[in-house]
Length: 336
Image (tube, rainbow, N blue to C red; front, side, top):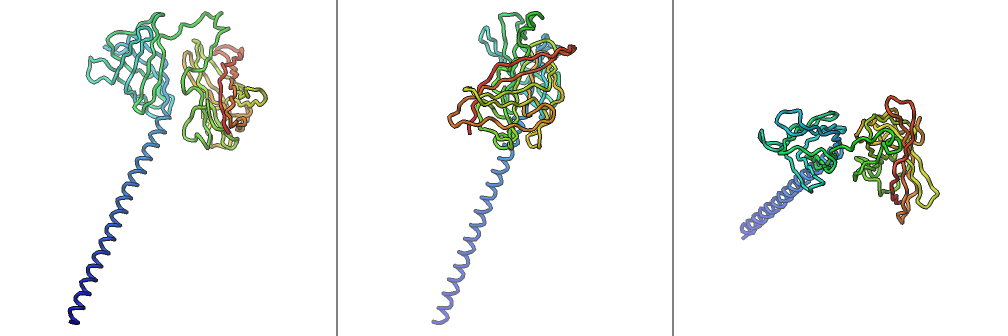
């Protein structure tokens, strides 16, 4: 009887040990599985952050359309500049005819002789890159027609161009016109600061108030509508004015290499806008020579608007006369 009792105790102890080991193994398996999923999540998150950074770093300008194409067998060439810091891959080109409401779609050419395009990869900093397009018919080049050409990138950005270019006005008419205009684009007025937009530029039409210590940096996209190079002066400025009157905040143009994580903005040195092309102008300094950062005007919980205007001082290449040009005003909402 005593031996039988000891035998039962031994079996119970063994079963308990097996059960305990099973629980430990299940716990370890669960931890390893959870760790694996967590690692995959972090890897995917890091890839998406890197993708977003590269996506927002894409910046190409379609500066011209040449037809017939300089490459035999193709219809026209899109001439583009890569002004960003990453390789840009064009994956589709849309051509919209505003007269006939017809939309043409061009993908990367798969075989010689088919409609499509080649040379869609543009290296960082590369200028005058020709994307050769094969189409059934050339684009019309007379006044009733106006084409909107949109180049789509592999990362989902879109960059547009109008063809034909507006004909230059006679000199005596252009003097009283607008040699510089704000680009008609959803991303034509943007900002950066160290707290709310540290990675890439965001729209500045509605934003939280940026404090002096956040180093707010603004930029505006402008088009040179003339056939001459425009040379900007260092006293170009941006004004934020309360719509009801009163508070006014002024900031001067700075270098496009200004880094919001530096103690001060980089002073403006020189900037030239080529004929019929677009560029960003950057504003951040409290003076043109040794600039410091400038706070936003006080934000309003009710979202009261501010009127934003730009005074541009420039001269044409080859001239000594300095001209002043106010750009059309924008409306901005700054919240506290």
